[in-house]
Image (cartoon, rainbow, N blue to C red; front, side, top):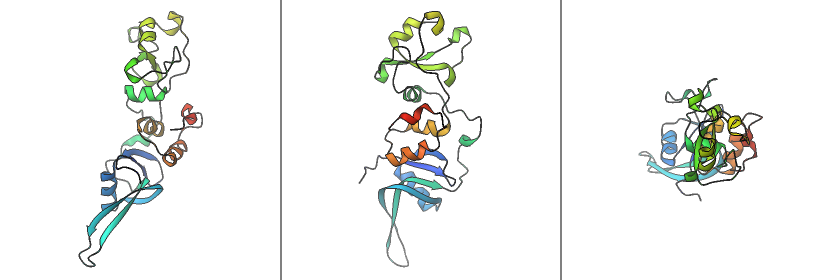
Length: 196
């Protein structure tokens, strides 16, 4: 039995991952009859309303992955050209909390967002130009490019697809949810190596 804090992965009816939702939102989707099918492991059994005719209380079985019929609120995330919003937590997760200059892993409080080509040199605040750096390396690099600072980047920054971004946002990801997300990662995604 999982705790009520385990997020559910919501997908569209074709299986494209959309977002993480809590069990209340999952229950709402069942009540609104928007669930096309569900798969993955059984997470919760929620008690529904009492049927006036039979006097029976309905039970809703909530699984770890819920495919839903289209709703007006669905984000245009699957559109080509969609770029997920850049945030430090997602960036640090993309780079596995490693400083991409010295290669050491740090707690998020000791990490920072480094612009590979500095803003002062017309660099942009975009996924493809930002890497996770420890504060020491970031200070040493200062307003220079890695070449100018004589520093070597350990990995190429990349813009995550929506499925990769959902992975980056996940706090606790069950193995079946992980398998499901990985099936939607690009073939060359560096995130395939991650276990959870």
